Image (cartoon, rainbow, N blue to C red; front, top):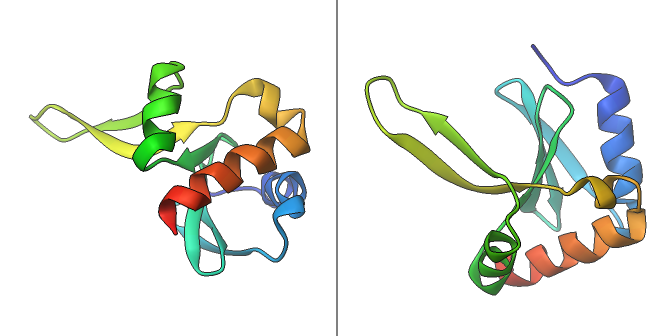
Length: 108
């Protein structure tokens, strides 16, 4: 399953306050970049995930954001450095961009 054109358009519109963005399809999803830095993923199901590092990762973990994990065959789940964007941010581009800027500060 791949990311739909509608979901890509939604994600780009949501984060347009960040300025020029680029994107690249990867493994059925989409990576979103600002200035060459991946800051978010769009999964094929339409969910958006921000990349967390440093203090930002600590904050969103403490706030209880859902973290992306996957199960290796025969192994423990592996936690990826991405957390699901809260529903409130999906309806509020200013909030979504503020969160993305916070993520980018730690990723830069």
